[in-house]
Length: 139
Image (cartoon, helix red, strand yellow):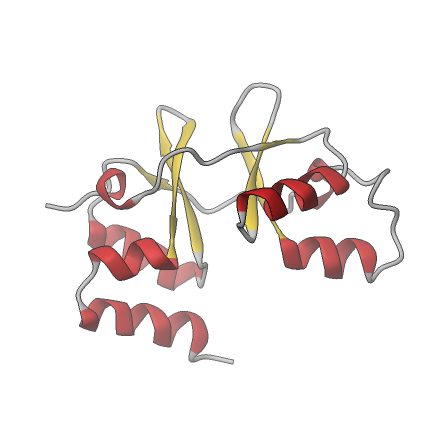
């Protein structure tokens, strides 16, 4: 049985909840990623920030990226999957919530991330089609 731990990529780097928006923008550029988990002082996941969040919810709204923090961008409770969840549960969670990236948690700590590319490597073509239709096919 393939689990989230098998599917995830390790080394997900968090941005601290007190960091300004300039910091995750640079970090995304340097890492070549479009999103970063936001972790609190307790090292627990507080949310996810995307490059689109920075553009739409910060810059386009006329906010100062130097004074707006990652915590300001964390909305609600992030969707996560347990490291021992099977691939079917991962697929169900990502399609149900229509998310393209899923944090993987073990003992309340972030241990990795599952992206679309990870799904493509570990799911059958039929399963991948379900994901694509769910996330991209609906208005």
